[in-house]
Length: 87
Image 1: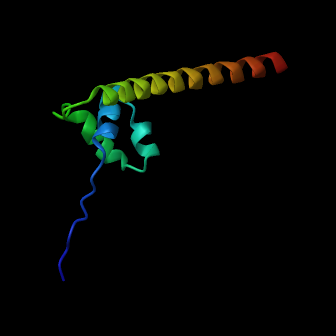
Image 2: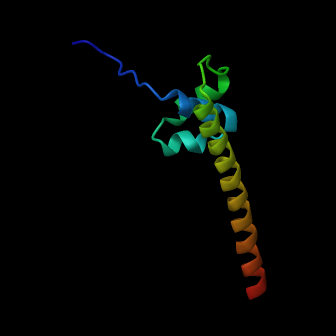
């Protein structure tokens, strides 16, 4: 019986977004194993010809990840404020 590994292929845009934002939650949200996404961060950016549309797409994802992190912080501060006001 042969032991064959199943090789997965991922869209280069996803790899690029994860490498630019350094946010693993983007990859894990797309059902990519955490170890695979961590490997993407360790290696340098892939040499792929990027069209201008792809750059705009990557920029939007970078901004979205930044805004999501900011919202998480603000939610935590708001929760803390509500708890302090109730006391």
